[in-house]
Length: 155
Length: 254
Image (cartoon, rainbow over all chains, first blue to last red; front, side, top):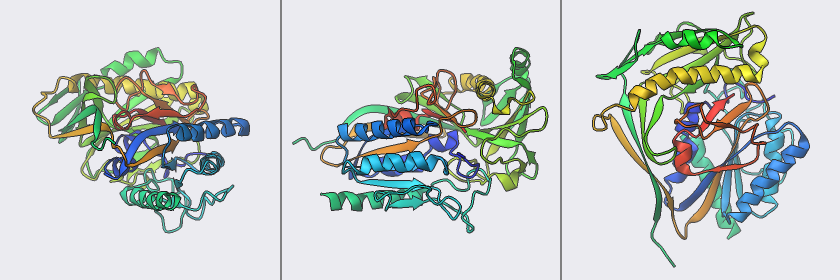
């Protein structure tokens, strides 16, 4: 379980990532950096990298964060865990993920109340068409709008 | 309190648009025409333990009614001209992208969690951030691995490495493209915006094995050589500057 062809973010996607452009071009946001975190195999390690990610954010004194995931299924275990670590530290967090009808979260927690689903297919499934279910500008704008709301509520 | 923006680092990306691609016996970029060559592959493959052969095909715009093996990656052709990744000057080609595909000798597609082989126009969704546009050329680099190597992480890494050496020949010409004859020029700054909401972006990426891997901070934008695998780094969070990320710091190996 991991990265299906339709959710696969190619190297070209990373080179011209809509999420980066939307957040970096918003004058009300001070974008401090992009954190890349992996998805290790065992639960102990998943906990470890999730906690380290949240600790980084706390140390950076961020007002909020958007976490986007490449892949689903087993990757959602890491994803839910990292979001919980972030949320439990009182840091506003918004998620972006492929969900559709096929990829409902295998685990969930109270901090996953604002997830932008970037499914693009009517059936909500992994179509095996490269690029189809990947985040675009509208998804990124939605995520940032959610985050601004959450950050305002936290003030 | 300080109010004004503080600029930390500048990155300039100059684009060079390509309108025609030809497979000939030497590499060149002239008058919006890219010429590529396969000659270097012969030597590279002879030394490879995992790769049986490599084919290159030029796919013109709207000519997608053809077979493709499973798509491993779509890669832009970019190169550093001044400075290191994330600052200085980068040249990049538009109108043409590399599509890396893979199969093994026995006919198994190189894929991990669903595969995308089939008729190209049905398997590639055009005009996304991560895919070519209708009017773009695609250079399809198809790697045939030796039997059973499709799930071997070393073989996948080798496929990316050899594809990157092929791209490097184009990069070496692109480095020398006239700095004033670009198609578009974009300037980006890593900056501090005091008193604004501090936000970090987190990208959770794959890091478990063959076709479930990512490399960071290669020597060339969106390249392979010099990159560090997220698996080898223990999957721990690594921070990139916005300019490093937009300068091709992340190479998808999914």
